[in-house]
Amino acid sequence: MSVAIAVVDRRTRLATIAAMAGAVVLDLDKPMDHFFGRDPFPKFVSRWHGRVQNESADGLVRDAFYGLLFACCDAFVLASSRRQWRQHDSLWSS
Image (cartoon, one colour):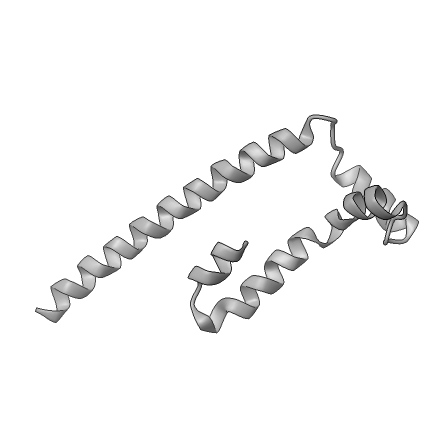
């Protein structure tokens, strides 16, 4: 997440942070329950989230694998687009 914040344009940094925070806020129930023994959300929110996101015991390994895979894809796309912009700018500046 810190890499995403570092590479986005300064004008879109706040929106990027807000999007990432919104994407993970409902997943705070697991570490809060594990470390503090309580769910931070009302029961109806936890029931709804449990139905939407039915997780298995090996989910963490799978999530880590796909997270790394998609992060590599994002890095590749970012590097490719920056390379294209540099080539585009060099064509117009000469």
